Structures are given as C-alpha cells and as structure tokens.
Image (cartoon, rainbow, N blue to C red; front, side, top):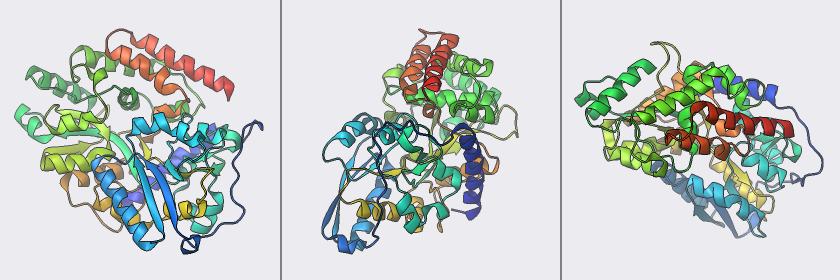
Length: 451
C-alpha cells in the first residue's frame, strides 16, 4: 500500500499518543506480581534446537486466516528446527479462555492479548506476560512503528495504567470500523452511498420501506453494539472529547451528546432497521449474512474486508461513516490489530520473540496486502480488488484527517458487560438511553477511583 497512507497513520497515531500521555503517567502499586524482561537475549533461532512453539490467535476470518497460515509456513521454512503448534479461536472465545490458559502451568508461548484495561493490563498485573523491551532493543520495533501505535501496547509496572511503561506486544494489521454497503441493492433502491448522517437515515427508511434489512447486525457478544454506539458517538461529539473520555482525562458518559448517540441507536432499533432478534445473532455471522444478501448496510471492521471481497466481488463497497455535514472530515474508531505477546512462563522466549519479529516484518506487511488485510506499516505492494482499494483509501483519508478514535471498551476492565449489557437492553426496547449511559458512567467512575 502507498507509503503516504502509512505516513498519515503515523500522524493519527501520534495524536493518539498525546492523549495517552495526558491520561497515563508511570506508576505502580508495588504489590502485584511482576514479570521481568530477560537480561540477555538471543536472536539465533537455529541454536535453540528443536522447538515446538505454541501460538494462540484469533485469526479465524478468511483473510486473517490466510495471512497467519502463510506467515507460519514461511517462518517454519526459514527456521526448520521450529514447529508452530497453532490454536485458533474466535475473538470472543479467545477472550473467554485466555486468562485461564495463561494462569496454567503450561501456557502457550505466544498469544494475541487484546489492548486495554480489560485484557492486556489485567494480564500484566497478574504477571502473565513478558516485557518485550529487551527484544525491542535488538529487533528495533520502536524504530519501525509510530510511537502512538507502540504506546497502545505499553503498560506501566504492576499493570496500573496503559499507554506508557513497558512494551508487551507488537501488532501486524491496521484497523478501522467503517460502513460496508451492498452496491447492487443500493442501485435497485435508487440510493447513493450517504455523505451525511441525514442521508443515511433517509437510505435506511427507503430500504425498510422496500422490504430490505437496512443494517445487518448481530449483537450476541455485546461488543458490536459498543462499536456501533462508538461510531454514532464519533459523529455527534468532538473526537478529542471521545479520546479524553476513553482514557480517563475528561468528560462523562452522561454528557448530552453521548446520551444522544444512545438514543439514535434506540431509534434505529425501534424502527426495525436491524437484523431481526439481533441480540441473539453472533458477531461472526453478521458478515456471512450480509454476503448472502441480508442487509443493505453493515457496520464493521476492516478485518472483514478480505472475506467480503472474496464472497461478494464488486458488489461490496466500503466507506468511512458519514459526517454531520457533507465534506466534513469523518472520525471513527480504530488503530491496530491485537498485539502478539509472549507469556511470562514460556520456555522459548527468544524463539517467540523471533516469531513476533518475523510476523510483523516488512515481508509480513506484504503478505497482509496479498491476503486482503490492512497492514499497519508501509507495504511494497498494493491491493488489486475493488473493495480492498476502498478500504486502503478510507484508511488514508482517516489518517490524513487525524480521525482515529480509540475503541471504547478500553475504558474500564468491565466496560463490555457494564455498558454492553445495558446496550442490549436498549436495543431490545427495555431500557431508555439515559439509564444506559448512567450505567456506563457508574462503571467508569468506579474504575477511575481505583486507578
């Protein structure tokens, strides 16, 4: 992908780093278990002897799966003394089982540990992950990655705060959550891709009136509603306000614009704009249903692009969420994919570090493009498929305008349940917007007092 795209990403990341720095200062309570970085490291994988490296990942979607399978194949070809034992799980299943696996006597060597207070920070606090700073010095990750992106994978000693401190992971792909649409259905409806939220509301009403499912949406796992809420929030409030709120340096979830975003979500549900019984539909089934024709629009991450491109060909389109006014810069949540981390009990930390270095190398960025993904750093290759070109263009536009906002589930360790649960109630018509936002604020306030 074009170098300009990645330079824009660096600018967006740098702005995000500024927010992180304001919200997070080094510190430690001093009584939590601590995993120390190795004093000496080796980059000579061949001298490690025959090694079986157990890797847990969530790369189960089409393009993601192809990407990691190809990278594992190439790594083993380069280092024939290493065998990769891969365990792949969906994002939701990985989040449910990873902590138990890390606390066992024989945890995996490498895992994808999600950023944020709910996952990575908790694992660091429990001494389950290995600091990677010693490996960073020899492999030079900090020299290749923008500071803002690296800071997303940093945690202070003792797991007190995220955004600074030791490095605990390195990511491969970039991510943004945008709006997919079925070009064929839009043409039949006589509707153009919306440039504003007002146009989008009109398109939803038209689709509903013609018997179509306006928005393909599955929310069994709660996170999809949080992402959709975050997109609406980005469209109704200032991006800096969102950044400060998520990272704990200002604002309230009960502010008027945040309640307004929740009300919009409730209104869409009441009007029947979502997939029927959406709270019972699995997240991973959403793109499958959309590809089959169930839905005119679908909000989702760029991690679905390769699969949709393969299944829908030129019928699938992608754009950033609409702006409040035509021509205004868009904002949406995103950043980088789940980072690859080394567990503190790994007996093959040096080999694990070499593995992480390989799957985040310039070669890996090219593989990312080849398999329909969005590499987080500059790649020498460009996508050829129409949908993937649109994804690349959206990433470039968002980065140029500094429009990246953080995932809102970073806000607290319990936010997915504390806010995601009430959002399910909102969508089901059982709880009003102001009560939902009060639940979010109560959880947020309680966490801020503990920090």
